[in-house]
Length: 315
Image (cartoon, rainbow, N blue to C red):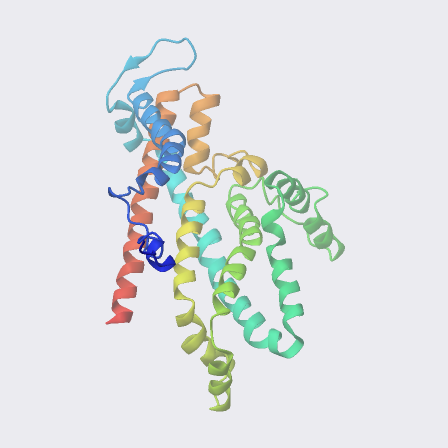
């Protein structure tokens, strides 16, 4: 009887990779996030768009179809346009100023303090700058309400010790918006610092040292090496912070409640006001819809700008 070699007795497919008999679809792995996105974003947005076509006080009140009437009314609403004007100030306070300060602080921590005093000092300062980000908004609002208080606030008390009568920071229509901007800048600086320092980790230290040996000062190294190297992180910060600035709500509600004299209205707060205080659900839905579309357009423009910059850098 012929003997069978052990090598020949093994299955021929043992060492060959598994090949499925039919194509494998990976779309099933996207199903959970797709269902979550539909439940959290698409369905509420569709309901909001539907409600914006009606005049409705909410609850069991009758709904009167007005079509685009709510949107037409927005065109002639001074408070609506004033709230969007205030959003520009929010963008300055959340995007422009913190991003600029964050770039400088991250470069100083990485390129100077980290090398002079060690990475532990830089990490400690980075965590310190980020601390306001983890403070609950309600707690931060209470603290800043005390700091900016007109009668016994910390700032006015200090001014009083040198004979200066401090203003009503949150009660003066000319100062309230700028006071909120200060609070937002304080709370936002830590975010770009952390993101930028993470991006700087991939910068070769020898590149900075070589530039320093060649006589490049800190500012020139910052412009020629640091900023170009972390350009992707800058786009991320600008995108996320811009979206956050357009939908800012809690600081306005806690610090000024939209006042004084509607000087601190922003779109999200104005929508909330119409929804829950004025019982104009359809009008509030129209404001929220316009804000959503504006955020989508601005986010798309920022992403297009990022891709265009990448293509220009690669060409």
